[in-house]
Length: 75
Image (cartoon, rainbow, N blue to C red; front, side, top):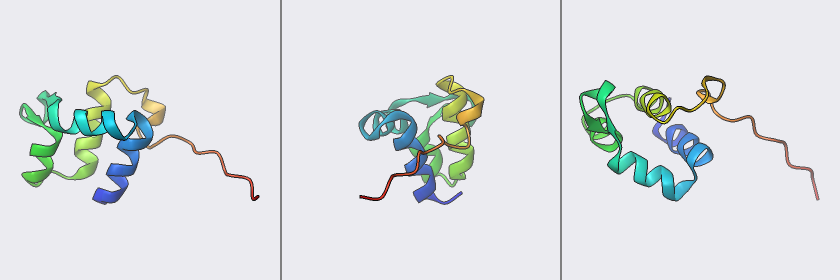
C-alpha cells in the first residue's frame, strides 16, 4: 500500500479532520505504543498502520480493505 492510498482510506473512513487527529494522537499498542505518524516516520508500512488503526477503532473487518464507493452518475 502506498502512503497516498493510506491517506485516502483514512479520510474515507474517518473524515479528513478526524483522520489527522487519529494519526497524530492515537497510541497504537500493536505498533510499540507509538502513534500512527510516529510509526510511519519510523519506517512502518502504511498497511500495517492502517490495520492497527482499524483494530484500535473497532472498524468492521469488512471495511479494512476500504469502503465500497458508489459510482458517480455522469452529469
